[in-house]
Amino acid sequence: MPINRTNSHRNTLLFIGLLLLCALFFIVDLVFGSISIPLSDVIKSFTGQNEQSTYNEIIINFRLPKALTAILAGAALSVAGLLMQTLFQNPLAGPDVLGVSSGASLGVALFLMVGSFLPFVGIHSGLGIVIAAVIGAVGILLLMLSASVKIRNSVSLLIIGIMVGSMTGAMVSIIQNYSNPDALKLFVVWTLGSLSAVSWTYMQLMAPLVILGLGISFFIQKQLNALLLGENYASGLGVAVFRVRFLIIIATGILAGATTAFTGPIAFIGVAVPHIARGLFRSSNHKIILPASLLCGSGLLLVCDIVSQISIYTIPINAISSLFGAPLIIWIILTNGKKQV
Image (cartoon, rainbow, N blue to C red):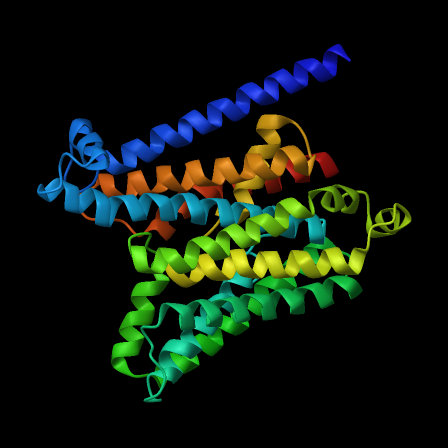
């Protein structure tokens, strides 16, 4: 009992610390950028005392939606990665590694490039891009799920995921060769990844979708814990495995698809953050790790956004997230290799 109380106290302190860090990174993200804005002016903008200032326009209509997008995207990708790692029983599963983000990219490519030749399709439609990305993400996830039924080896499954990602990338390349130049330019800019593309109008589409996906994830957290013990054991406990798998597919498709649609592909967040959360809280309990991944992902993507704005020229968010995530994935592979030896 004392050990449980100690762990509970430690977890509470960690959650409070993560919340405070996210709040700090959020404020820093509003203050720093190509133009540094004093904190006092940021506060005035929120209290309505700075309405006529140029700073107010920058903060309210550019930096605030960008910072909120970082929070939503970081949470969505991290939780999607956690769901996939639980579903596939694979520590390296994630939206980008298993081709889900590639599927979302293919959906967007088809919508933007093929749609540019159809006069009745508005390629600048935010809702159309979201629907295309979600359909592409869910399609690839269904394919990987069907493969996981026949192939239990995690390495083989990862190889299949990489191959699926390569095939979707090849299909995108073929589409690019026959696409409208304007649509091609729009797609290339989208692939670089950007948090600033989400305006308040697009936020009205992205936020409800992310909240829906997160809501489904929290709804099935008990069943996720049962899946950690294996599908046969989960079935023995009375868990409807097929239903849980279906809900995981829907939640992951919505989270990865909606995020990728608006921000472009953001690498490694979904794979790396669940491991950070497990390492911090020393637990695999989804009641702890799910909210922990949400907070860690939001904080990490805020940091990535801050770093991308520090230099004279804005660096694509995808490049920064890769610099953070890739070394961690290498460390995970090396650690698992040592354990097997």
